[in-house]
Amino acid sequence: MTEFDPEKFEEKYVYYFEELEAAYSEAYQQLHGRYDSTILKAIDRQVLSESEPFYEGNGEFRVELPENPRERVGPAADHEQFDVVLETLVDRIEAELRNQFEFDETE
Image 1 (cartoon, rainbow, N blue to C red):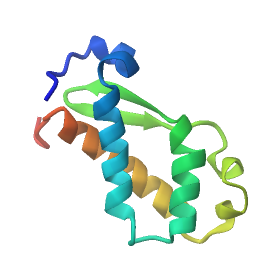
Image 2 (image 1 turned 45 degrees about the vertical axis):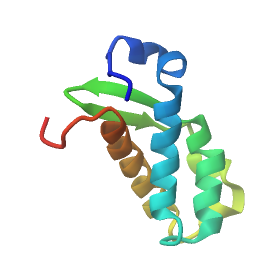
Image 3 (image 1 turned 135 degrees about the vertical axis):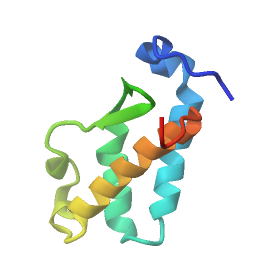
Image 4 (image 1 turned 90 degrees about the vertical axis):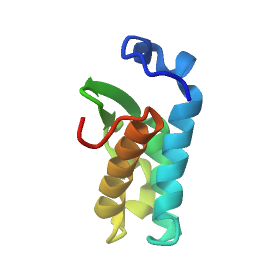
């Protein structure tokens, strides 16, 4: 496991690409089978692929979404689960980032 350095997270794609990829992938896998795969894939490919994770400090991460996520997914935006799937995926990614960098939930 790579030791986490908040300053290196500024250049996250250079230093932490594998951890970021693992966090996003694990979050997706956790929701696979729980939600409609059409909406899950649309959000993953059209919204999350353009998202940006940030380290907030104290072991907390934030995933910033691109503008207009609904417009990015086309007809999938009308799916009744869109908001819940998007929010759940973002929450899971943030949790997986904490996990990848070995932050305890209580830190």
